[in-house]
Image (cartoon, rainbow, N blue to C red; front, side):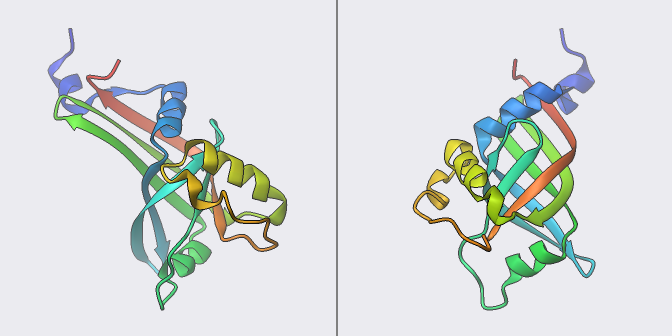
Length: 150
């Protein structure tokens, strides 16, 4: 039997439950900050299953807003949601350092994005690049809650 608070706030997910959830979903909202201004964007991501999440930015604005925020954000937060109903949902938040990958990390990032990103074809047909437009979030903190999900 669940308590009244658990039905409202959910139960805390274990780290392995969070990892599995992140692999299943493959997309979320990435929040960055530049000059004290927050910016959140929905993005597909690849996940190594424990600590590294890879993002590729496609579609550039004239102001290069995504790139500017990515370059200026040392720490970012990713929110991943799955809401079936008011009585059945999951959410996870991952926070950590954020930086552009090196050319040596290109193949690993491409493979992980192809494996579990919501839009896995983002990097499939792209050849190795010396300066890839792919960023990695190094998970320093993960938390998650779930209601009605066993």
